[in-house]
Amino acid sequence: MFLDPILVQMPDSLDDRFVIATYYCATKPSTNMLKFAAALAVEQTTGTWVNVPCETPEVREKFIGRVVGIYETPSYQIEIPKDVDERHFIIRIAYPWKNFGAQFAMMLSTVIGNIASAGKVKLLDLEFPQEFLAQFKGPKFGVEGMRDLLGVHDRPLLNNMIKPCTGIDVETTAKLAYEAAVGGVDIVKDDELVADAPHSPLVDRVKAVMPAIKRADEEKGEKTLYAFNITDRTDKLKENAYKAIEAGANCLMVNYFTIGLDATQMLCEDPNINVPILAHSDFTGAVYESPWSGMSATLVGAKLPRLAGLDMAIGLSPYGKFPIMMDTFINMGMQMLAPWKHIKAMFPMPGGGTTQGHIEDLYNKFGKDVIIASGGAIHGHPMGPTAGARAFRQGIDAVMKGQSLEEAGKEYKELGMALDLWGIYKEEKAGIFDLKG
Image (cartoon, rainbow, N blue to C red; front, side, top):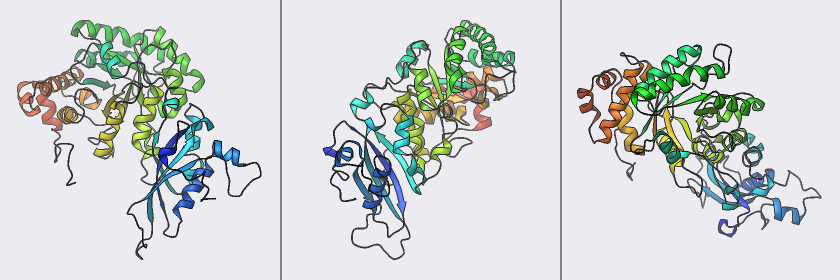
């Protein structure tokens, strides 16, 4: 079967019928990788472990997966050294996308379904043909739409997560939202742990928070968005969105991976939901953290939520309390911003322990198209949340003018206090181009 000319093809011979999946695989030294790759392609399309009568040549031609690339690293071509106990491969398989259609549930069932249980197999990337991609609308607002909405075009945006994460009533939430917003925060958000719960019902929260946001906007002369978490059972998602907007919400948030990408797309493409939607990436670590299996952080944390239509996405940074590698972090941000046919760019929002001391590094990596997300460094500032937010804006404005954070910290009390408390992040090797490694 692995020598079937239908099954093994050149990638540049393919047409728009195929989505191409790229995998990392590791196997024992004796494995014939061509057979292994062919088995993956067959398992996820037409076949099983034995030939069956109805798997005709016509069925195979139309529906079977194609192996379009096998690359070993390191590339053993003559013999396998005796001390090698595992071989490592990059495999590319092309799947006829009409097997599953323009949706996420069946696409993921195809490209990383049963084979997720096949040992060391990790889905690294997906490439989509134009005909497939055209059926997705992408973000309604995206980077430029968010900037137009806020009237801010010349600097990074600032986000604040309300802290404590959960357990506070709507009045306390409104008070904290006001204090952060009036200090210069552009987007305040519910924590991902905030539900439509008895101590903080969604509609009551909206009705308490939005007047506080409006008061802050009048005082500072800027607009603020508040992203209300509408994450819930699938059958309640639209209801939550509609009632939040009716109560005055100007932004929404979903824990996109726990509700599912198709449910997320349903919300993003709903013509009655005309406010930005923020993506929270909780639970994605369960999918990307293994180096051997699951999906890549870039795919699950950037490419797929952008395709689903989310306008901005919280992603973990390597600065604070969570383990993520710097190059993975940068690549995720770039995948949110890179040109992609008609799909608008999605704002990266690094969080997870971000302080005022990270402003300069974030700007050096992403320029102005980044939302700096902070919880504790705003609400935990010794002078209070308003001062914590003001310290961020002082730092952002200084860096935009070419001033260092050290210099700005001597000029501004709020910023200086934050930098003294949490420090300034300095990367050992500056710059993105480095062939020496």
